[in-house]
Length: 266
Image (cartoon, rainbow, N blue to C red; front, side, top):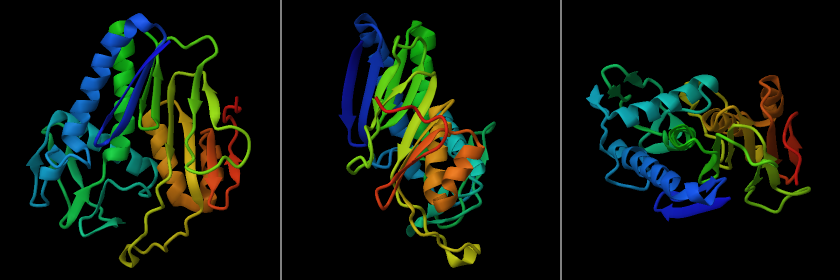
């Protein structure tokens, strides 16, 4: 097993391969994929395409940004609006609905006074994309970790991939290390739930969870579920269980809650 880890202004990234001889080519693919993503939607690169967008009507966007926005829109639909694609430019925590994406013509229309909020879902989507590219092009087993958003593709290690879950605080019980023995995704989140404007007709929800981690068939879906659970509050464990999504949620009081299927700590 071999690994490559690097950092940019937007975060840290890691690639693992089963065989050391596969690392160089896989790392080249992964680094290219990360750089391409950052150039279109990184919140920490002022020159990124996403920062050049305005709310003045339809505007052309690159294919990669269109795909990233589409991933964020899928999360918005999956979460029934709890994970928004756009927020108010003057108050980033408030939702501003009404985005129009034409994937065929690759044009995007933003609501007045809004900005895109796609990086968390775009990064998870990119983890899936990079892992699949490494596996299909090189015929190898890989684990791609983009700042804690993990995608696995190809052959698995005999005992699975060992993953350390970051909670941001001392572990309430047991270990944060689990074994990922399935192709797919694992994601975590610890951002506070969004606050809702009174005009939206929704009551603000108190923050329930310090962090969430979810396993799914893809990193994109796992990330969407993580962010939805944070915004959902007390109803999150039942919602995740109904959708057969194994998860580990850490309450703000320090208690950990797991839904059925969450891998045992190792």
